Length: 446
Image (tube, rainbow, N blue to C red):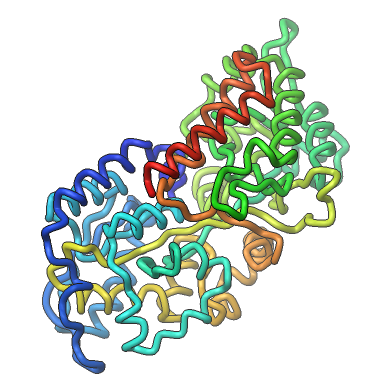
């Protein structure tokens, strides 16, 4: 899974720290400034590989690293699991970073490229004649920044809707909602309250602070834009954002914000067996394809279905689309063994066997056209096929790459939380303020 704590836990301080640390370390020669070996040179030596996966997923990574070492016996890979972007950026800034780093979010691509934390891989791609057109267009876009390819893909995540089939059937509902109006109506029918109004079960929990309800996962439902053609924030001028936030606030008000917050605070951790959907405390929720593996491991009795994201009534023709993101990896500017580092990155991002194996073990979406055409066990899984189809839907979207990384979303998220709580009441003024803050950060980042 692409740990979405990478999306919700990455802080704006990472951007500031990255720029400061990497600027301070700017005198260190990067691999891109060193001569590139001739084609056909066999990689050798030690490579240090940092990734964020843990537990079951880290073990899956280890199996594929073992396959790489069998193919390249002269390369020794030292793997450090559980390493987030903050640690990686700090280490690179201090000149002690890994040879290969794996980031949990495409949001970071612009920051990593712009700060030169990861080197431009064009010289290696060109030398080894790697055909980047084997990556779908969405993947090509989120692994570049302003024409600079500092990243390669490592599986993808697609976000859609999960629903509890048993609870829907009990409420007389035959299938998942396809529009936001249907989602609200079904959420109300599926909600259970105690006599005093306390929520026992939420049909859908609309708070942006709940699990995966971050702005990036919700904005595809209304077809909203983050940036205008001039690269400045579109949040205040695009009416789709107002539509999304009004829909959200209407449903929050129906539940009662205080009651929702009390209910949310009582729910279990997202990544544990006490996840609210696992426990039947939430009947429908937005989540990524990786949730399938968690449900089958931790909640075997839950009869669940998956579906594309519901769309606003005006965007109903886009039904079938979802939100796409993914893990990205690159060669650190402080890599001690850039040749072997590139060999590992190339293997993990282009070897069809490795990609399919990883996708099936971790339950993530493959990121090359060849792997997508033959995704192994994933193809026979009807719940997973929904996500593969969303990934390839031309209307699916991903976050734009910017030099401020996750700060784009975090700025919007802060306002959404004020809006849903009622502490912000002027929607137009609030969205204009989001515009101003995002544009200020973009200008500072250059």
